[in-house]
Amino acid sequence: MGMPSVPELLIIMVILLIIFGGGKIAGVGKSLGTAIREFKTSVTGSEEEKSDTQSSTTAETEEQSHQQPHEQPHQQ
Image (cartoon, rainbow, N blue to C red; front, top):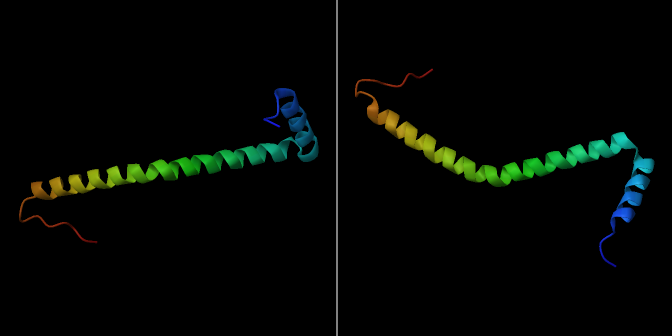
C-alpha cells in the first residue's frame, strides 16, 4: 500500500467536508499555517537576532567613540 491516488484523496476530502463542515476545516488550515509560520520564524529568527545584536553592538560602540568626553548620556 502506497500513497493514496488523486481520486482517493478527493473522496477523503469530501468525507471530511461533510463531517466537519467548511468553517471548521478553514479554521484548522489557518491554525496550521500560523503554526508553521511561527516555527519558521523561530528557526530563522535566532540567526537574524544574532546578526541584529552584533550590528547594534557595533553601532553603540561607534556612537560612544564619537561622543565628546564631556558628554554624558541622559538618565531618566
